[in-house]
Image (tube, rainbow, N blue to C red; front, side, top):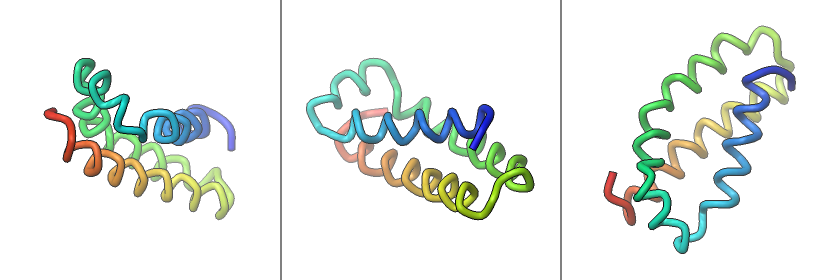
Amino acid sequence: MKGSLGLTTAVLNAFFDIYAEEDHNAVLEELGVIKLLQDNVENYKLMIQNGKEKMDKADCDYCRTTLVNLKRFIQYKKKYIKS
């Protein structure tokens, strides 16, 4: 997968891996990261919709899975972080 969608997807997945642990919650809260992610869910969804014709099925599925994981990550972190 190439381009900004590929980069965004890779960054989001790396971000989930790095910041999933609760010991990072203070930093995420201080910087307002969860609100930033929440405000941009629709932008990522649009990126996927606009790029799906250029992707094969596997890449499209990977992006959709990342979108689901983004929503789940936000919901999970909102339990511990004030937005």
